[in-house]
Length: 198
Image (spheres, rainbow, N blue to C red):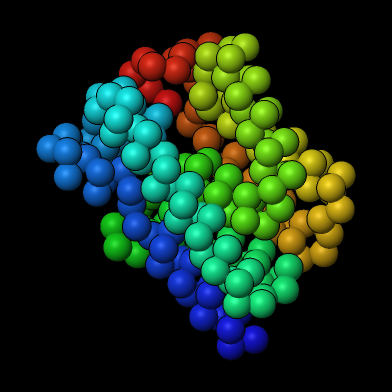
């Protein structure tokens, strides 16, 4: 139990590292919370910072979800401990203690956590996102579609118990964090990838 608590704390602190903000500071770019959509994530950074800054942000957000889970796996934690570590990293991204508890939407960090927890589920979610992004060119719709299907992927690949509940919770929170995008989608005003709002 102590090991799980320690990795949950570590996961949350790792998730709280706001990659987008740090990358923008290092590259002399505007604060992502004050530009574009105001979301500190890779999609928004791409709009005003370019592909390099967005790629670094994406990699950092993914790794802060993946690495705590991999380390927990190496430490011998069971599937429940791994799932809780992934959830903690995801919550750290959404509500970062180092940045006033105002974080991003969590797509890349959730993917990183899923990748550490069950790579087949993560791969299925990634393929769904890529397919939807290619078809509709709307990042939020791709993310929402992947989030809706990921619990089904997890169930299909044999994830059960606490890990399945964690996947459901993470995907539910991810959808909730996209509520403004859902309003834009319903109104027909959501922008495509590469435009000024996400």
